[in-house]
Each structure stands twice: as structure tokens, then as C-alpha cells.
Amino acid sequence: MQKQAFDFETATISVVKKGEDIAYEIKRGRKQAEFFAEDLGNGVILEMVAIPGGTFLMGSSTDEPESSDGEEPQHSVTIKPFLMGKFLVTQAQWQTVAGFPKVKIDLNPDPSHFKGANRPVEQVSWYEAVEFCERLSQKTGRNYRLPSEAEWEYACRAGTTTPFHFGETITTDLANYDGNFVYASGSQGIYREQTTEVGSFPANAFGLYDMHGNVWEWCADHWHENYDGAPNDGSIWLSSDETSSRRLRGGSWYSFPDFCRSACRSNGFADLVNNSFGFRLVCSAEWT
Image (tube, rainbow, N blue to C red):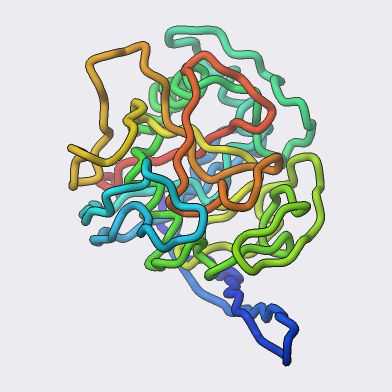
């Protein structure tokens, strides 16, 4: 596979006070990143963005609005380079891979409630997302998997320390969530009541789309109530209880804005399906 460069739009949001009124200014810019294109067949392409390694502070501080005990203690984590899906796994990608040879369980080729080839696949359980990864790995010879929680947050933040990768607050101009509710000193927006096509909003500084909102993203880790004892190397954090629930990150079209924060953690049982649950892929950077 050949490395390619792509240009993309980013956005940052800042608060602008005008007398007693508060307004928001969105500044848009351009960046470039590298990606690899995996041809899944039938004209369906999977784009995997090269994520550089680095060290970041995982979790939230006590003064971050709407933070919770489960996001503490903040701790330093060092991440090795890896590849991550530019987009959430789409329904077109799901349908294609569902046609690959079975590894462990059957896959419904069309499980989503909100239909659209370029919308994220949803109503898939953690087990089904793992089956997708295993079928794709078997087909390509590359190790596709779900991200660790640490990899996900590192990729979402893309070098930022603010509640959202675009700044201190969130707007429905930049993400798909329940805009009837506001975050901190933010303002109300629209509530779309459904998913949107992937790539509908600006990317973060790494070139990843929809890291806030649209659908929750399954991660590989078991549930842990906080970060006491968490690994500091970005590895998947498992427990001895295989029945433990699995992590979800990023918020969704249905979520309040605080659930879309970079540090916010949720969880669901591995067999749970919901029209706000989807996933994106990661892959080792070793084959680059």
C-alpha cells in the first residue's frame, strides 16, 4: 500500500464578548496529513490516517466543566505511532466486509437504523465490531482492531488540552449532537435527531473526522471506574472479568454536549446494540 498525502479543513472556536453578549468565532484553517487507502472491493475504500506517536495527559482536570471522577486521575501516557480510520466505519464498508468469510459470528450486512452508504454503521455490538476487524484482518493480512481508550483520546485531542479538539466549547456547526443543550457558556444549536454522513464537519489536527458526536465509538478496553492503575503505554486495559462492559467514546447525535468531550467515558455491555453506537478502526503502523 502506498502512502498518500491529503489536505483537510480544521476549525477552532473562541468566545468573543461584545458588551454583555457572548458570541462565538469559528476560525477555519487547512492542514495536511498522510493516509493509506485499503481497497475493500466493489469500489469501497477504507482510508487509514497516520497518527504520530507522542505523550499526552489523559483524562480531565477537576476544573473542566462537567468532568467526572471517572476521568481522573489525569496521567501521562506515551503512544506509539499507529493508523486510525479517517472516518467512522460506514455502512458501505460494513456491508462489504460482512460479505468476507466468517471468523466467529454472523454479521447482518444492513443493521443500521439511519440508512445511507456514507453514514456511520450503527446498531452493531462490540462483538460484531470485533468480528468486522477479524474478517478484515484475515482478508488483508493486516492487524485491524478497535482502539484502546488511550489511543482514542490521544487521537481525538490531536495535541489539544481543551474539552474539545476545536476549543473550550462546542457548537452544532462543528459536530452532530443534541443542540437543545449547551456546554459551559456555549449556545444552543440544532438537534438533527439522526446521524450525518461521515466527513460532514471539519477534521481535527490529525485529519480525523467526527471524533465528537455522530455515533459513540466502541473501544477495546474493559470498563474501569477510574484511571487508578491504568497503563501508561497506550495499551488495551483489560480486566479478569470477561463479562465486564466495554468502553465507548466520543458521544453521538443523541448526546448532551458534555458527553462529546475528549475526556468523557461511557460504557456498554459487549452484546448491546443501539442506533447511536458505531466504531472506527486502528491498525499497526509497522507495515507502513
